[in-house]
Amino acid sequence: MAGQVVILNGVPRAGKTSIATALQARLDGVWLNLGVDVVIAMTPAQWRPGIGLRPGGERPDLEPVVQTLYAGLFEAIAAESRAGLNVVADLGLHDAYSRPLGIVADAVRRLAGLPVLLVGVKCPIEAIMARRNADPQGGYYAAGDTVPEPVRRWQEAVHRPGIYDLEVDTSVLSPEACVVAIGRALAAPPAPSAFERLRRRGLA
Figure 1 (spheres, rainbow, N blue to C red):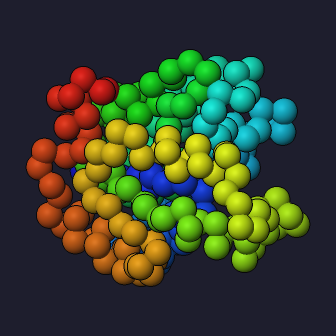
Figure 2: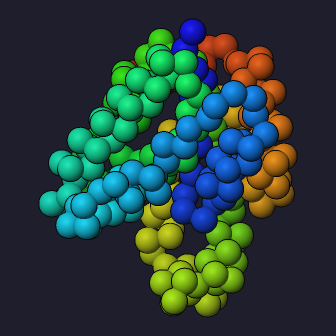
């Protein structure tokens, strides 16, 4: 029997990693985390940020590698699920590159037939900026009262087209509360699923 797959899709600092950690601790069964941070850690330095490449088409030289890295990730998720293991993947899926890469469509194709729950991890940009300013990481995230253009691009690109099985707002829900909602959706998955709706709309 295939394992469950939960894809947490959202912008950086939206709280995806915290949800994934809480999910691993609270839901039954073995849950592997195959998210963006894991993949970046495996990626050679010269190809980073790899699948963490932000929207805007600013590194077209990396885009072919990004496409291949995503393909490998989706195949790995599928393999773990078919082996009976559960997978949570915290990602920032978008197609705002210098040329369309069809990342979401590729996920739908490679994970076809598996029990996938696509979760939109939402968070208002004001809360995102408050988190960045509170944890500037040596100045990298510091922005004061301004919203850097890359942050705006993330916010605009990641939730397009916005078709999900479940949406959670981390500005009002704790990671644990998000996991409760995810657990309920896993127990009674919506039909048709988000992947099926994407297929029907010709988006995958």
